Length: 183
Image (tube, rainbow, N blue to C red):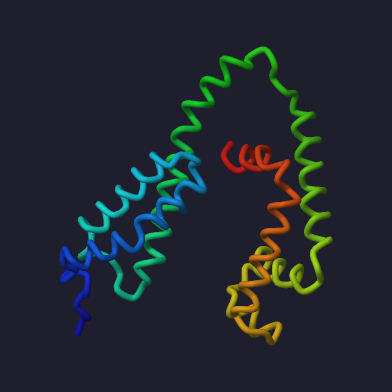
């Protein structure tokens, strides 16, 4: 017998409580991507509107919090993609006579890769091991914890430290990284 979806009975007061609890954190989360609080609020409102419309189709086995954050992240990335096209057209006009040769791009990419490799290699041993298992072997925190005989919370803390170090050391390259990811 199929389990009834509990969100079909998701009433307005429950939705309002969810909205009050998560609207502000989701706006800040979206703003970390789009760097525009008005756009972030609009994105978050769209996600909540979709959740209300589609509440009967939400998978009850999945965390609603995770669903909210995933939806906001995806819409934020779509926003960046859609607005990149507009900004790209403006930039194309402004720098039409200053195109970078392919060789220069290859050199910049090579320098960036070297900087990333060097930064990863400079991580403390435990952080480096956790980071490599997560990012390159694509293991979940639980799997890393089992493999290294540490707690999942320790894995989470070490990943957080490793990512902070990488962000700090690679901050000068963020524009290049964004361009690589979105071009």
